[in-house]
Image (cartoon, rainbow, N blue to C red; front, side, top):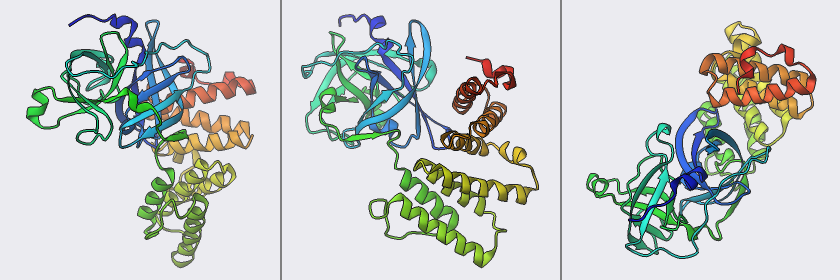
Length: 376
């Protein structure tokens, strides 16, 4: 097999971290940049259940993390998605060229991805295109390539390259049988399947309505039966849960352990709908009850690991309603509590530090920031 100039190619291949709605890590996948605007290609199953995605690239020898502005498009059946990175500093991003030609059986190929764990970021393997399935194979319904190049969990969304260094496919998985793994029976979606993918155009691909409906149904014991997100919009769901919650209080009083969680989930759902006034109302009702139940102050309640997320959302609500001093206060609490609970390298800590530093500058309150918030 020939050789590629990998050093000029793998800088455009990314490590993709996934986080759930409480910003807890869900694992990682891979991806790659395809244009100077910062469009990243990965597998749909990498983004499907993630609330937040952080994309790590190596730029000029330095590892840099980028937030995702939105999920542009995606197709579950073909297991492909495209994302747009936030790049406010206009950093020049490397990108890969897409092949205009379909690969053939027996063609040489290379993969670049992050198998197993992040320490192995942008590992390279080589092989051949072993077979081609125009109508799909296994779980993949699009034009699928079987390749002998080995890769494993974490490689999902990686780049499959031809001998010209052009992208011919997106690594998506392998034969899960032990014999299939030994034989390096692995698969990639042909890059041509990117054409005509359904638009998503949202910050996250996950179904927020479905998530909070399930959360509230589970916690409150109120089930909507045959109602689905397509038949009731978010506001109707929230009206229903609010009414049921008020009825429940009338029947059983407020000394119910589930109520703070019901309140906070209603508040967080309002937050997702950008109704920040209502979000503040319900989140504070949750915190008020927790203070009452635990006989603790607001600061003590916010120190619980789960409340780190609540503090961040409170701050965001105050920021969006232009109460910047309260936003500064709660961002600082979120940063402090995340730092104490999870450390400086945690995604939640980093996000809160970025926010509180920006507000401190706007409000001329830099002197109130702890020294550890100056960590890059």
